[in-house]
Length: 114
Length: 118
Image (cartoon, rainbow over all chains, first blue to last red; front, side):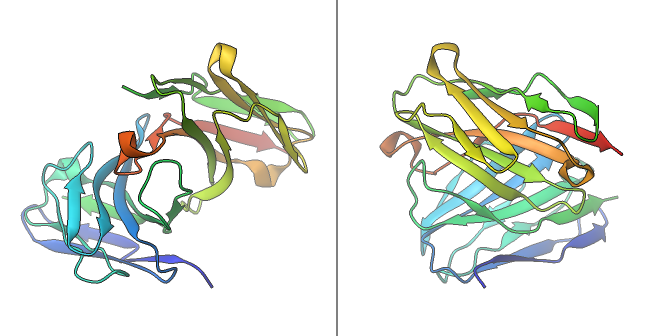
């Protein structure tokens, strides 16, 4: 089954404790990205990757890091989480990296930073 | 810069009523794509439809229909004979095509929460 898989789905952590949210897709997609969802703001892009070893900032990259060492994986790293990073996070992928290609989302990761 | 506005933050209807969710967008590009996603209470995002800017034909899929009007920059979504299972947050999104959007970024509206009561 074609899917984008994120882990963990739910996490409560403390300020400053480094954490990683993993993302994996099994569709051989070139493009992957991370979004965060906040009430009234919809989803906003954090980082994206057009292919292995190619990453770039989205709209709201501050406080996040990513890496793309393999085509299928695109982890999101919060080096020193803060309460304003409490949000619902989505990993996404599409076959090609250009605008207009349909994007498929993972199930979401609920992150709470206290 | 691109922008998507969903003016209705919350709509409540009774089952079997028809309901229309509004979406207005802004873009300077002539080639772009519009999407609708559904987010049920479980949280995942479900892809519903993708339309390109050159195709203004309305589309119907079962009880769902979409009305794309470039003249008013709108891409509205209608659910006919709503059901309780339609209760969800619905997002409209815009993607500018090609090299102008190398990150294939989707610009989302704020979402409309639809509650269908039995």
